[in-house]
Amino acid sequence: MKRGEGILPSQQIMSQESNQFENPLRELRLRRPPFWLVAIFLIAVVVSWLPLVVAARRRVQTSAYPRIQIMQDMGNQPRYKEQQTSPIFADGRADRPPIPGTVARGQLNEDDHYYRGFSTTMVGGKPQVTFFKGFPKEVTVDDRLIARGQQRFAIFCSPCHGMDGSGHGMVNERATELQEPKWVPAASLHSDIVMGRPDGHIFNTITNGIRNMPGYGSQIPVPDRWAIVSYIRALQLSQDAPSSAVPAEKLQTLKQQQ
Ligand code: HEC
Image 1 (cartoon, rainbow, N blue to C red):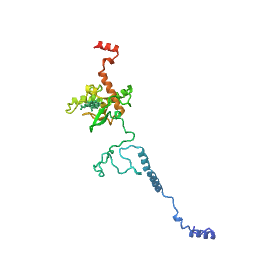
Image 2: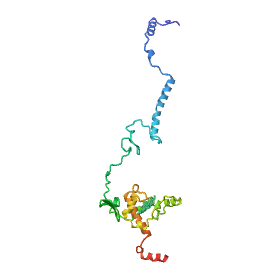
Image 3: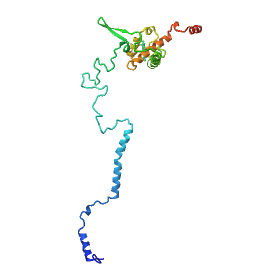
Image 4: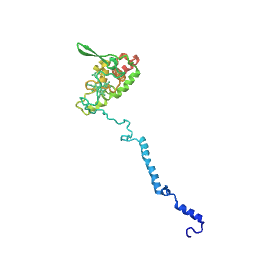
């Protein structure tokens, strides 16, 4: 059918007009994108979530490596680690010792007897050290204290001095077996010398060590040191009790057994 045939002239004009005046923006209207473009877009959206998932997982994961810190928040700052060197100080050490005479809050530790076991007095311009006899007033010697001392003694002292204090601890036995030339045997705590030491002297031996024995002050707090002293006294008594300390009827059976 030829164009314009079978339609009214007025209609023909209209259709001609509508052809003629077609919307010029029609070509610019967004058309439905092709399927492959939509697919790529959706995949890209899902892939963009991956960093979030990884970040969420890393938050609960443990790792041998330091965490990645996107927000620094002053988390990483230039600083010295312990035992490092620094050119700022004359001695080249980054660790600074406390200023002499520094006292930490609540650590004035004035009581010589309790905290040190000895006092120092100046006699003729020379310091004279006197060890305290007996236990300081802060310490109550009772079963609880001795039991605590026994437990601490087993941990800290028995490796060298032995559970019975005779000086035959495991470390001592091993060193003797290996014939370590420099090994100084741990002293027997039942010797007359140690028996005669004032309590403050034994306390100070635990704190600072003595001759070849290292000090344990940094590992054993003050109350535990006194507990150990009380236990050593109990140990000594166990090996050297006078017969008067034994109840009469028990003494009788003991004598019969001998
Ligand atoms: C590493 C081994 C070792 C340990 C652990 C050890 N000692 Fe000693 N102790 C020694 C030696 C060695 C001597 C003898 C030192 C010397 O004569 O040079 C000694 C000596 C002593 C003496 C005698 C000191 C004197 O008056 O002559 C006492 C008391 C003593 N120790 C108590 C203790 C107590 C309490 C503990 C636990 C807190 C302890 N020791 C832990 C090795 C040790």
